[in-house]
Length: 246
Image 1 (tube, rainbow, N blue to C red):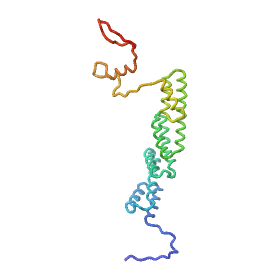
Image 2 (cartoon, helix red, strand yellow; image 1 turned 135 degrees about the vertical axis):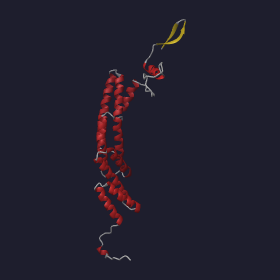
Image 3 (tube, one colour; image 1 turned 90 degrees about the vertical axis):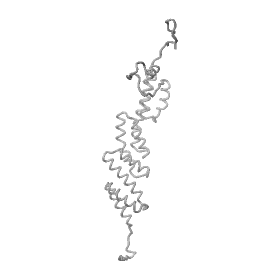
Image 4 (tube, helix red, strand yellow; image 1 turned 45 degrees about the vertical axis):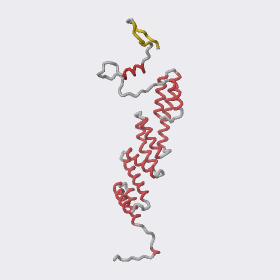
């Protein structure tokens, strides 16, 4: 039989459960950024006592620590995905906004420098879902808004000078940069209404070589969209062509 031990109650400072000691060990491993070791211990604890208080918090800590390790290694996209998971589980996690901002700051700058504003907006959208009002979000959106408003000013000047095509191209570029900037939507509406264009989806472009000797339907469509003939042949008679005017 097991030996029996007795202690005086007034000599007991505190009682630490075995499961709590397990959690303390997991905390130390997480602090050391030992992701594999903490994940293994946490998984074993969940198998034995899945209902023990504190397990959910350690899961958040582990995911956050894993994201921090990947961020330090330069694997920003992977880190951002982990921080998004922490945000879904615990939006007010301490330090989450700063880490998420560090993930996308350089990526947004690279996208903007390359002119890929769509990718920059994607990263900004992901960041605002994690940390509304993050300083990185405010910095980049202010910069993009300034650039978009500058393009709008150029578009309005071109429109006033009668160069409607240039004005339309400039205001469309402003929309691609940052559509939420003040004045962009109204300028886009007024300028594009004066210079309207048709966009047609095709499976092949006109002018591409084919084995067909005559113009293809793509060639004919391109001609109808780009040329405006003054007269068309309506009929033939007595070796003469009857023309109709447009």
